Length: 417
Image (cartoon, rainbow, N blue to C red; front, side):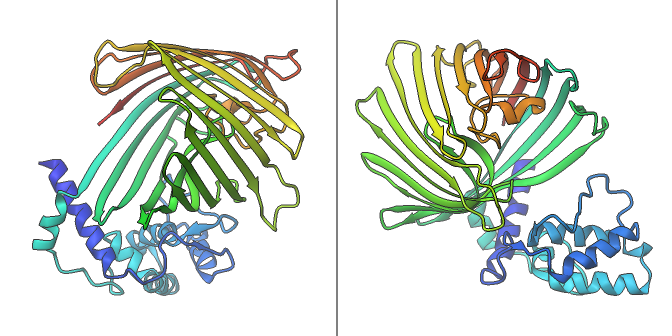
């Protein structure tokens, strides 16, 4: 019943969006020179956001229209504390973000509630799928300056079948630090964000995805992150699968990428990928890198993977090889797997930690950068939908003479619903 109600609310939200399909792109980044940043900042400085612990506005940070609308919505909730001048500022902001506020369910004199959709909404409810996952994670890093990290994370996915082979997905994530490795967050720190929001479909024989995307290249040695890549990509299916795209990452740089995968046999595949950053505002490039990898699943209960790469910016080379025995399946209670992976990367190979390699928050920039060693991992399914993961990284720096900020232990229990 609750899930059906949530679906109904989501459909209502999507229907309201359809009326403004040709308005400003809500996921478009608004330049920091726009007047709205100064307007919101005056409200922040006036303590109009008192009571919002997750308020994280900065005039130096670039936001999307939806993110700015969220700040405006919070100001509307506290407008009883505002003076006449501040109320005028809030009204002006509400008018600017009228569409986004309406889509968020915030109604003011500048917005008009949409009439409830009946037949159309009922027909669309079955096309909406809601899922998610929750995770409790503990991290230990051998370090002279960092402490243990304990984090609780919940994510909600909304998937909508738009028809004609097109789909829309958005994901909300809330992360709470119980303790933090750097001591900068108290036990109540919390942040909620949209880290995925994109449409995906086909135009003729070409796959198209636009929005805030996940990105994985090759076997993950260079890039395998499931969030926060703003841009577009196209895919070509067939015997040789290819993806090409241009995106903006969390470090605010822009990247061009391409990736090729093909199966030589039913059990053996090979990959090749390329990543290059290109931003006129960036004086020093960090990525001009390529990789080549393979995967083999021809052995019973044993998967083999390997990948080699080089980042020409620093002439930094890296490689990894891994074995996984058996396969943990969330649907099968008692299933499990064990794995061992060796990885080695010179300084400058992956300075932003885009790699698939696991790491603690304290050492993440060194996950595939100035590192070498072996990771041992085990996964176990204690109940349907859940996986308990344990991993230990016996790592040192690339020179092999220092394990500080490299050696780690990770434990997390996750559940998908």
